Picture (cartoon, one colour):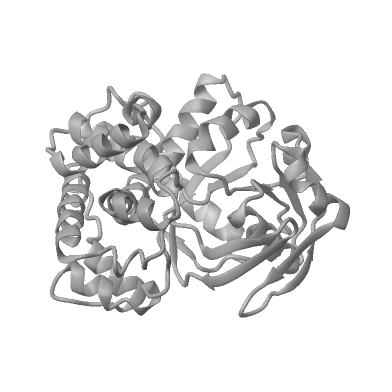
Length: 367
C-alpha cells in the first residue's frame, strides 16, 4: 500500500508556487509556508493557486493550509519541499530545527553546491535532537515562473533530475516516498556528486559578469546564451568547467562536463562549448538579466563557486579561473562573497580527509 504523504512547500516564489500547485492538482495535501505572510495572503484568501502547464496537471490547485508559522507548516507534513534561494537554506534550517521529526524528509530544490551538507550542519549547531532525512536535487525540476500573486506557470518539466540524500544510504527512501508524484527523480550517487554537477555554477555567474557592460547598457536586451556566448566567453566557461571537473576528480568523483550535460539534457552537440551552446535551440529567445543584482551572481557566487573553490583549496586543486570570477563579483558588488558563501568550515567538513568526506556523505559516519 502506498502511503499518502503530506507535503509542505517551503517558499512562495516562482518555483514554490509551481511546486505547491502541481502537487495539489495531483491530489496531495499541501501546506505552503512563507516567512512573509503578505506574500501569500492572496493564496490564503483564494485557497489555492492557478497553474498553467503545457501538460497535465493544470488548473486550480487547492492548498490545504497557508502559513508563516514553521511549526504549523511542519506539524501536518511528512515531506518538506524547500524551494527558496540557496542563500536562505541555513535560515530555513534554523527555523525548522525545533520542529523536525525523525520521519520528516527534507528535499532542497535544488541544493546548489553543498546545500544538504550546510543544512545538516546548521541542524547540528541548533542542537536538533531528531534525525530527519536531508536530501538535495541537482537542479530544479520545473522551468517555471510566477504569473501573479496566486498564479504560476510551468514551461517545462525535466525528464530526469538526480537526487541524493545525506547519507547516500537513505536516498532510496526519499525516491520511494516521492516517486508517486515525481517519478522524474533518479539516484544521484551522493550529495558531492549532485553538488559538483551544478551546471549553473559554470553558465550563470561568469556569463553575467563577462557581459556586465552589455547588461548595464541595454538592461539585458540581448539573448543571454546566444549573443552573450562569444568564442572568447566560451573559452572562459571551458576553463571554469575543467576546474570544476578536476575538483570533483580530486574527491573521487566523475563529474559531467558542460558539453556532456548539453548533449544529455538537450541533445546539443558541437566541436567545442561555443558551438554546442549555439546548437541548443532552447537557448534562443532567453533574454539576459536586466541587472547585475541578479541571482546568477548574488546566489551562484556564494552558494556554487565559493564552495567549489573551498573544496579546491582544501584538497589541493588550483582553480585560478573560478577564483577570478569570484573576485570580479566581489569587485562589482563591493561584497566579500567568500565570507558570505559556503566554505568547508560552514559545511562542517573542514577537518575531513578525502576518504573521511566520502565515508561521511555515503554512510553518515565521521572518521
